[in-house]
Image (cartoon, rainbow, N blue to C red; front, side, top):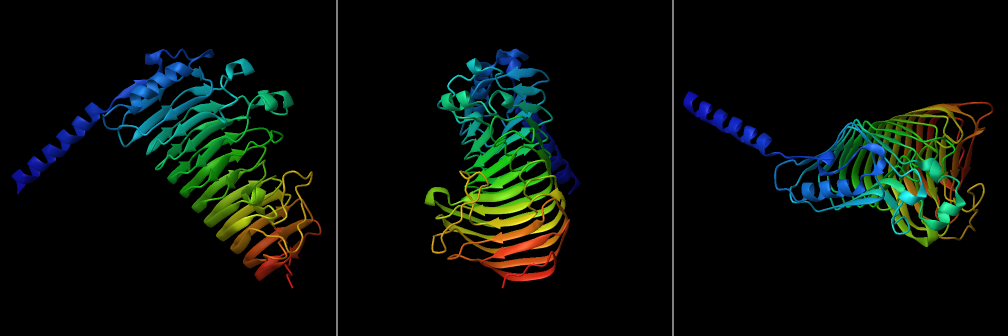
Length: 395
């Protein structure tokens, strides 16, 4: 028996050593990247990716060392040969500081794009700087180019993103679309509170997505959960400034959108224009259901709890009252448990639902929101409202 154990242990050690020896490193500086923050290193990054993605060794890793690398719009495409692909971001990546550097911007909606790269792992502690001030409020630029999102993942199942810092995206900082089994955590995302559309993390058409242990301070939603999503978990996120944690908007242009099985837990929101928000556009179709907000702390939030089925982005105040008979995205089975904090607005709780498709199975329990003369507004909503202040009356 002792001899058998010795043989088995020797084989395991041999296998481990062989795996470590076979793992390959692909350093962008070995492919010509300069890293002075001024030279365009896009082609060097793409050459590195081509070799990395085509490599057959276990756990090939792309290294971005401790320099500052300027790159223009790039697309890293898969599928890759090996089933796990690693990117170690040790230094900084910066977007072009002038419009001359945004080559191909008319076609590209994203600055850094990963497409069909399964089991991709990106680890920090490096930083991604989108140089967003070049774009914010620039009407001429908006006519020339799509205002790009900084980092976008499309059909990247098994995605892991951790330990990175993201600042000043022209548009959304991180987009997750068509991805399954995603884990995103220990991020820091920053943009000025006046920066338009700078969502922290946007999720769409994806399932089993975990967002956790992150700080998000932007000019728009900290996390936005859009149509086609199921089984989304957001935990231990510090949000604010920004527009809070949002589901939607859903049903724009009469589209059919679905969102279900969403859990938002142990989050802190400070100084946001909205807290926990569900927003749907009149004449949309679909549903949002199975949603839980639990153990949430709110500090000086303008609209702490809001369900709005009369939302539209075209209106100055984002309010488009719909006729009672109009089609709407159905909102149901939404629960708020142990939500505490302060409101900067007198209307602290808002359930403003459709006449034809009322919000149903809305539950509040141990919800305590204080502020000057705070009250709750309820229109076309039904549910149970227990131990809730301000009192909710949906008769």
